Length: 433
Image (cartoon, rainbow, N blue to C red; front, side, top):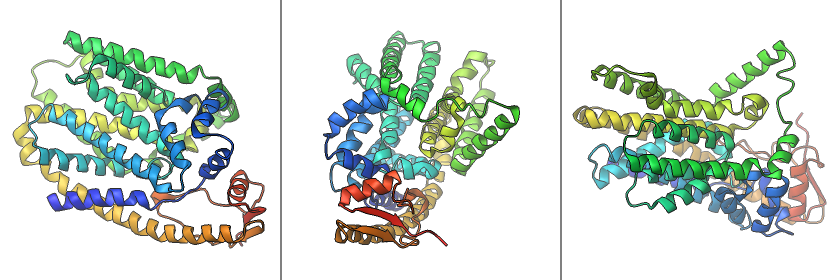
């Protein structure tokens, strides 16, 4: 198990280096010719996106201003790993784990998160511009773990919760739901007080986002409410079909395994308990699963936005993971012998599956990095000229590295941005025949 865990973590971080600039990256690089990253974000807060003051955007935009595409993805991978470590802390609070066991469990949770969010990584974990979403969930986890930590002062908890609250509104509303439920189910007065402070901080962060003039402008630019979906019952049926189909396409079998196993833990604990379940106890047990549903329901009035933005699904994955881990910890606390004898053994197959998938992604991405390096040299060699790329210039990258490429339309925004960045008159691809 130890060797499998070590190989898994090395492959996880090695994948961070085999990335390239794509999509909006070049749009921002052109902006940074006249703006500093911080100046751009402050301006962006007022004209385009209320989340522009988010820590994720701050890190991402500064990394975009460097010639190292892997810098942002490496930072995102480190935060992804730390998010898994926060999950390990939740388990450690309920079960006796030594340092080596904590390390292996953290790697296992990293692997599970990676596999559960597999189809959103190309817009979150391995894309400079999209790393915002990894930073968001890292901050959510950090704030949540800090609530019950005696080492974390309430002022620091408030600060990190406020910073975390400047994030995607649907996810923040989901977190607020969990904290409110826990307030009514926590007996410890200090625990209740700290959850109230965290809730207030998250709410203030939410206000920073939703009250931004930029949020209103972006909402309009993205079409606002999905008016077409709600215009006719047939349109609603069709859009709902797309919405649900996209949801199932994005989520791997790992997500359903997490939900089923967590519910299994709940049912076993309930059978062993003499207390009759109440509405509030059920609400408390399923709070993180309901939070995942809230984060999805937030996009219901804008179904087309969710359909076209796989990155939004990362919140669902992380909330389901919290549902699984909190139930695993509760189950292990009262059934530690069973956990130690049987459940722990499932870490090996999880790590082995991850190693196979991560190596496949590493092999495919390393090939594409070489192809992209040749492409960039071609850009530089044709400075001041019109450049036409072959239709099949780049063989498609693996699933976690899918990207928006140059189109056959030289007036497309991305084509224009790439041309400006490399000093080309214009750039396009041949049309596919």
